Length: 444
Ligand SMILES: Cc1cc2nc3c(=O)[nH]c(=O)nc-3n(C[C@H](O)[C@H](O)[C@H](O)COP(=O)(O)OP(=O)(O)OC[C@H]3O[C@@H](n4cnc5c(N)ncnc54)[C@H](O)[C@@H]3O)c2cc1C
Image 1 (cartoon, helix red, strand yellow):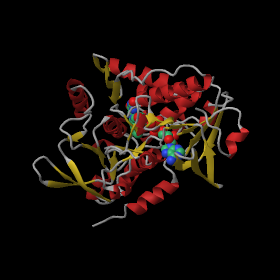
Image 2 (image 1 turned 90 degrees about the horizontal axis):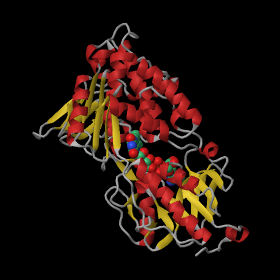
Image 3 (image 1 turned 90 degrees about the vertical axis):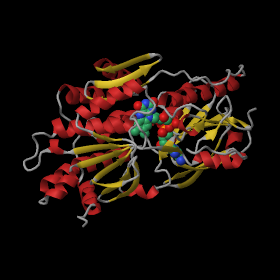
Image 4 (image 1 turned 180 degrees about the vertical axis):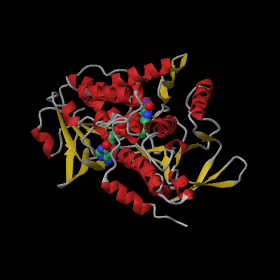
């Protein structure tokens, strides 16, 4: 059960568990192994754990990046059996039980007795990767800071722009994808323009900004109950957001995008800021593993797993979270619970205890904020909207945010943004301005 082959293994007393990723799946797996008689090596390509559900608040100036991304080392510093390694995993050798990661020092190979793969997902442009250049997505801190730079610079450039049509283009923000992230972004950009920036400019009126939410589906918030989605839709419309449903994106360029409506006609939207919130695909490590064990990934690149989240034919390799094709949604709770579960199987084997039964997901509900004091939430059979749902959203997010400092700073930022209308994080760096200005030279 616990092979001790390989150079490193012969020097080790305890089984080594390698975990790929410091997101919800990876971090919860590592923490769940705290008392297990194993050595844990967590390899991730960033030095932090990222609370992705609040990324849109970094992108719109409400929260600082540090509030939602504590250093993984700090989280695990008291866990003596865990080591954190920074590196991007480029190869997993299923037969030889090794993981190769890329580090500034070059490739590093780490052997394992058990492996938990929790590398999550990336933005998907549904085969149109060229859209990425002009329509960045929102998956990482880099993305959020890039978007914040673009959104805030757009108002600055509009103020400096002498031509009226170009002012309008600068003040048009298009969000593609009306799932929770798209809705939250649209609501927050609208509140930024209408309230936070209202008195800050002399030549433009930020409240005139157009925020357009586009989706190929017939309704926003497709995973929510229809009545809740309709309530969220009404709230967005009251905020002045233009919602274009049954509308597919055909092309994106430096001046905007071309869309096709339900009537089959194509239309042009001139916009300097286009944000992609339309889809995700599993990490490429999924296909890499699938090729080695002879299974197919699904359309989103997710890999099928056994009832205990293990890779088919490999009881010591687990795939959890967004990467697994298990019929479950790609949400944080699935990642946390599957990561914790995989760790419990490993810990039981290490202790010689009976392993737990198959993985069972406990759905704790879903929620999305539309604007200040307004959210929708569904928990079991209960459907809530408005202020009560927003309060629930606030407490749940504070509860799951990792790190005491992060909770305190988040709460303070929320007081500034929700009790007042201010945003504490409005810095745009000189490099961002220069890059963005070059990318968006006036086109005729
Ligand atoms: C903007 C946004 C908003 C969201 N909002 C919600 C929400 O409100 N509610 C909800 O439940 N879910 C939400 N989700 C989804 C939720 O965040 C994911 O389902 C969850 O993060 C999946 O966890 P995971 O551990 O599988 O992957 P992730 O949390 O994405 O973690 C992946 C980890 O793997 C690392 N990694 C990736 N590739 C490699 C590699 N090759 N080598 C080393 N490390 C690697 C990454 O750096 C990261 O640490 C949201 C997602 C996004 C992007």
